[in-house]
Length: 242
Image 1: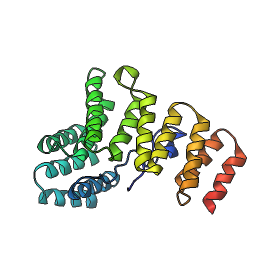
Image 2: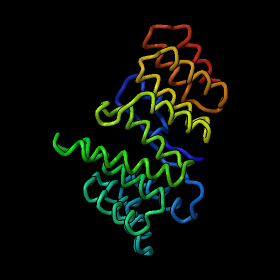
Image 3: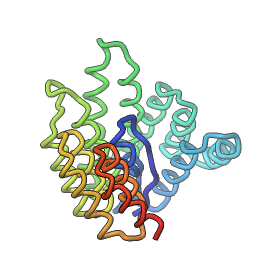
């Protein structure tokens, strides 16, 4: 599975959530759609003209749901969340059995929900959750949709389906597919619970299991520095240097 990184605005979460929001190749689907998703991810990460031109060129060669998906990706890269959602919805309607389309439709809808007026937010939030759930139903091994549910459950109020326990369940499901990304999901749950000990355990586990990764070591330094546990913080720096 592949991952890319994202930074959230929470001091301890900055490094804990790296790679959480970032889609991986879905299992059980034909190769073209995951290939288009990788192109979408690259464009979203780097929406400069060369990336957009490559996306436009590919969209011109596609048709139907795939073309709608790529047009949605372009709008998303330009932070035009409404038009992006409209294109992803077209892809979903044209080919409703593809988990990737549902996830990205939910993602664009979630971006709209964060910026919408209070009257529209509940409906958009429910749609976001529903699209993530549909993606998981279609492909239980598709990690981005489960990661989307982790984010949703941790961010939404209880009256809109938010639940730390449900986020924990999704983290466990992710771990069964990909131990590394599951560990990052568990770290986010620990942050939501304000459980520093569990957060440290999650990253120590990742550092032990994936010694070639710098992400958990950066997180261990950040968390320990925040709590002024300097010996542990500098130990993480020493491990990073090695």
